[in-house]
Structures are given as structure tokens and as C-alpha cells.
Image (cartoon, rainbow, N blue to C red; front, side, top):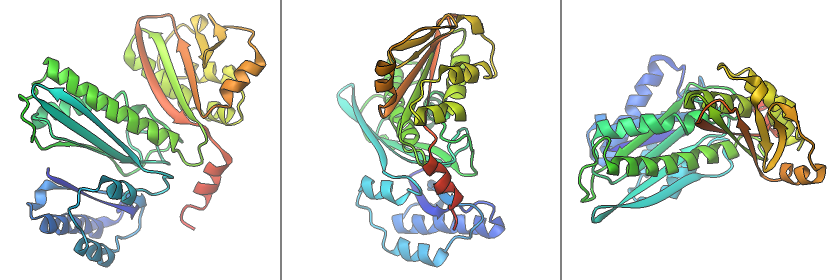
Length: 330
């Protein structure tokens, strides 16, 4: 793949054979403009489900397309209910050359991957095979984009794409090599930053929530519990109201689809312990209120069951979320 064409506003989903034809038409128009083969163009859409693509408008837009390398224009063009763009860049030295990796994403509502109204595109210039690149993406997406939730709603349109043009002079990055793990750390940095940006920009959100679960028997169990907590509507509304209601945290951890000893759990809100070995701890109300009033809230759970950990990110649930989604198509 050498290019990606994206439209926002209309999802081109549940639009039948005409929608499929329109997607291929977009691909063809982009390929013609860029003078590359049609099959080397990826197509992504985001927006309202069930509406047909305004192909005349799109064709007019393609006539104005320029290859200026302006990532900011691309980042703005793919937004829907997002309040700001989401981009990230990182550089790392491999041998005698520097590899650059850049990412851009959109997402604000209907965020609960594996399928979400989330698009993310990452480009780099490393010398790496498509198979190795795919494996790195598969590993990293599990602990980043698949660990965010805004509202628990999934979507018809979801894509994460990584492309590398191989233009640097580094030795080819081979799977399980030292360079491969360095490359994965670059990818992890980019995708974590974009994932947190999506969670922070949740529709109507005023606070980012980060949940860390440690002391689990398996990493997958820790991630499952973290996502259960950050996805709880009662936890999210408590965070919005700046209420340190740890009962909602332990309850949402308990109904995660994994087993752990519920009698051995520690919970911290910020730096303050509120539950130790599943027994309540007295805390200074003014001190915890200061933590709850911040724009970023961290919640930590220690299960005391093993050595594995996991994280998840989300946002509070506000009145504005209801307003935005009550009037989405009207």
C-alpha cells in the first residue's frame, strides 16, 4: 500500500452495492491523481451510517488534491465530532540512520475497540518487511487502541493502518532482533499517545481516566479488569462529579470476565489509598478532592495475585455527551 484516502461526515456503511462502487471510485480517483496503481490505495470512511456518498463533491475535491505533505491538513480533514486533531511523531537511531515515525488519528464517540469509530494511520521510513510490520502492529494494538473506551459503543467503521516506505539505510529490521524491540517501542509510544488522545477527547468529556491494574496472574486479565473499570458508566459519572466513590471501582473490577481474589485488592485514587486488602482506609477529604478536580485521574488496583499488569484509558461521562448524541443527525 502506498496511499490512503479518507472521507469524514459519511461512513459509507450499510449503503449496499452503490456504496461499494463509490468506495472503489474513491480508490480510483486517488490512484489517478497520485499516478499509482489502484490496488495500492487504501480507503477509509467515517461519519453517519446509511447515507450515500456525495460523489460529485468528492470528485471536485480530488481535482484540488495536492501532494504537499501537510499532515495537519490531513489530521483536520478526517475529524467528525472530535474537538481537536490527534498527531504524534518520534525519531530513533538505527545503525547510522534515523527512522522517523508519525501517526494521526480521529475518534471521539462510539469508542470501544475492537470495533470503534476510530481511524488511525501511522507512517514510517524504516527498512522492515510487511510481515514483520504486521506482527508489530498486532502486538501493540492489543495494549493501546484495544484498551480505550469512551461510551462502550462499537461501530461499523474502524481501521488502524501502518505503512513504511523503507527509505532509510538501516539494516532490515528482523523479527525478535534488538532493533525489532526498539521499533516496537516506537510504535508503542505513538499508539499509546494517540489512544490517550482519543480517550481524552471523548464526546463531552472533561477528564481523562487512566486505570492501571497490577499484581495479576496474566496480562490479559489485568487489561480486562482495567477496561471494565474505565468503561463503567457509574465510575465515569463519579469521576465527572469528582466523587471518590471507590465502591464503584471495586464493583466494576468484580464483574470483569476473569477470576481473582476479591478479598486482596488495593485501590489508589491518584497517590491516595482508599482500599487496602479490600478494607476501607480513612483519607483526607480535602487532599482527595484536589486529586479529583484535576483533568487527568489515575486509578490503580493491586490484586496481589501475580506479577502481571495492564492499563486502560477512558473519560468521564457528562451531560454534554447526551446532548451531542441526542441531536447527532438533526
